[in-house]
Length: 258
Image 1 (spheres, rainbow, N blue to C red):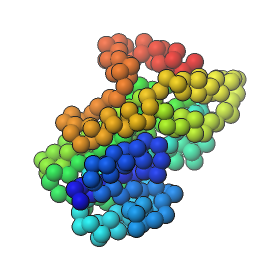
Image 2 (cartoon, helix red, strand yellow):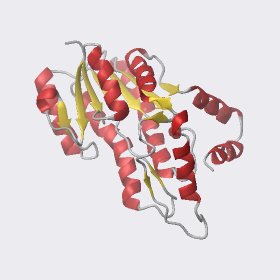
Image 3 (tube, one colour):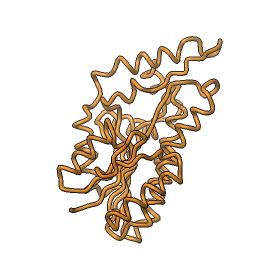
Image 4 (cartoon, rainbow, N blue to C red):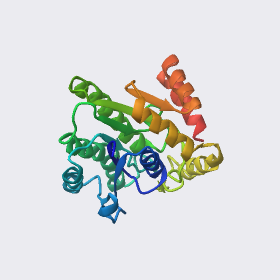
C-alpha cells in the first residue's frame, strides 16, 4: 500500500475516474458518497453536508489505515436559476456541498494527516468567470477557491500542500443533471431555459472525463502551484478577465451564455 487517498463524490463521473487512476497507481482509495454501500471495499456512505457523517466516515478510515495522506474534495452540484427566484433551499444546498462539504472533510482528515500530506479542491472555472443564472454555483465555487487558497497558506509551514484545480466543462453528465429552475417573470422571460439549452448544446465540445481526470490526477500528485486552470480556452478567459474591465468581461461571458 502506498498512499491512503480520500475522495468525495467518488461513485461516478470525474470522482470515479480520478479514483480509478489512484488505484491503478497502487494507492488505497477511500470513496465518500451518498450512494456508497460497501465499507469492505472502502466505499463509505456519507453526505458531505452533514458534519457528523463526515467525521464518522473519516474516523473509520483512520482507524482502518492509521493515517490519511491525500484528500480530494470533488463533490459538487449545480443548477440553473435566477438569484431572485431560485429556491433558497437549493441555493443553500449548492453552497453546503461545495464549500461546507470541503471544509468538513478537510477538517476531519487533517486530524490524521502528517507532513507530506496533500489536499486538492476540485473547483471550477466558474469560481473565476461568472455566467448568468449560475450565481449559486459560481458563489459556492468561489468560496471553495478562497478556502483552498487560505489552506495553501495556513498549511504550507506544516508541510501539507494544498492545490485548487479549476477545470472548465467536462463531459460527465454534470451539466445535463443540473436542476433547472425556470420560474420567471417579466424581468427574465424565458432566458433561464434558453441558457440551459445553450449549455446542453455544447456537450460535444467539452473535455472528455478521461482527459480531464488524467490532467487533474497529475496535478494532484505533482502540482506545485496554488491554483491550476484545466482547459485551454478557460485559461484564455482568465487572461482576458485580467486584461479588461469587469464590465467588459461580464458582457463577454453573458454573450457565451445566451
